[in-house]
Length: 388
Image (cartoon, rainbow, N blue to C red):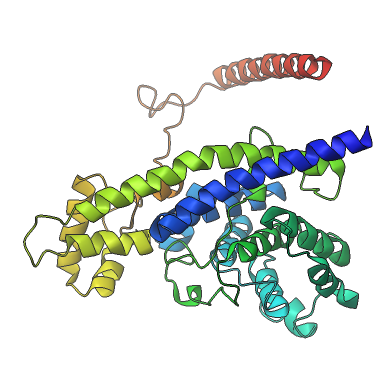
């Protein structure tokens, strides 16, 4: 029985590698499409990774922290952790070629550590007894990327006493991406230190495809525990679901690029519309000022170019305000856009009148009853699934 389960697990892992290879091929065929897709996925994975640690955060909570001028929603610590993790995932480095430097960067960014706490105190070697180096030495040349990532992140988990699962998941992605690099090397140039959008803009220097936190957040949250048989099965199942969906999403990125590259064709020879579209392909989240700096036009000219791209459906404004506005490509905008707050129930006709406390209690009673009914249905459904 154990041998049968092991064989099934190996086949499942092979299926995941095939899905991942298809997405990798899309990204290699058009690096701009890979950049757009990973920019979006870095945001989603970072939020999911923080949420797995029991902290409340959503993609829409991040933009107010970056744009300023408004009230930041959600847990501020969770928001900062997610922004740090986005930057780590966009430029993770190569843990195989330069393990100490890469691990120190991931712990600083993904671990929410302040500068010199762990890395500097330990001389940039946070793993006791060389366990991490031993894990790297144990990697076999034929190990596929996801299996290699499981080996190394597992070694880090054991040596660190499972002290920081967010770093484990970031390391998983860094190793997987390093194994996919066509030319092994240090990678991860520290280009995002100067990103005024704190990681939401700028190019991606990474080759990862698998997103572990998203895999464990599909449908319901499951614990990150790839060292156990059940945890590994949950991770593989979730990766299969996520990668299956993302094949379509990276296709959307390629379609956006096709339209963006065509938007400047047939226009006046001095038109900069094509240059503006290419700037958003490289940095999918920009202000008019940042666009003006990137392509060398006046602020007014940048605004006019953005307006033209918005008219063609290639950009969306995501700040919903008159000043300090930010625009993004549609895929990333769907995740980051600041959504208008819903009015409180009863506001309008009842505005200006004192709320009826009895009506409030009755509404709460009805809501709790509806929740009990929904939970009962969920329990019955899960019971049937377990029985099946």
